[in-house]
Image 1 (spheres, helix red, strand yellow):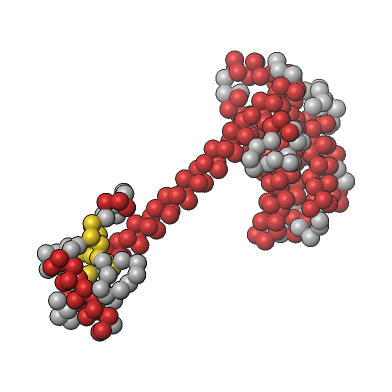
Image 2: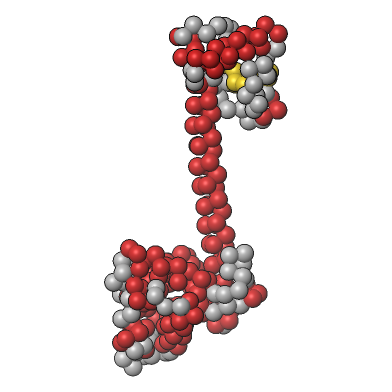
Length: 266
């Protein structure tokens, strides 16, 4: 059975039907404190039942199933209980789950309002289970080594990996933002190059920030420079040429160097 399904079933067997069937649309209307109470009720029930040597039906668990369920219980503990020793920059005062699940409830309430809080929690735990638990148990040797750890040590290991995963995700998000910003700057520079004043020798220039006709003009290349200190300002005849073209553009309300050439601005 899929781990999320097992996780949710354990919740259902331990929680009242009213709570278990509560939709995200209903939960989203509650206070943060009320939402956290519901979340922790489910988490505590799961930790208790997963750690038992028997199934909810009273059947003894196999050693393999018990080891896997005990680790799942410790993963839930790592996700939904706070330990100041493992507070990270993104979850300084509360457990990861109590920070993330309310956000997922809010998002799901707008997209899939009939989804239950249990389903949202199950998906979250399943993701973490797949990301960490399966990796830890990727070999029989690691599986045996991890199974020998005490509950507290398993929780510590999960918390370490949760923090590592969150750090990686934040770094990936930051990198994606930087790459997007770089693309935007490249596009802006390309547009600026296309609109620049074209001198008689083919170089393209733009006026300085003052925008004055009698000001300085900086040469821009087709590719955006890596260092702004490499800027080259035109002087002498070429500076006067740039000033004339720019004055012509202002007088005729022309916005690009190509248009200026066609209009006879020299």
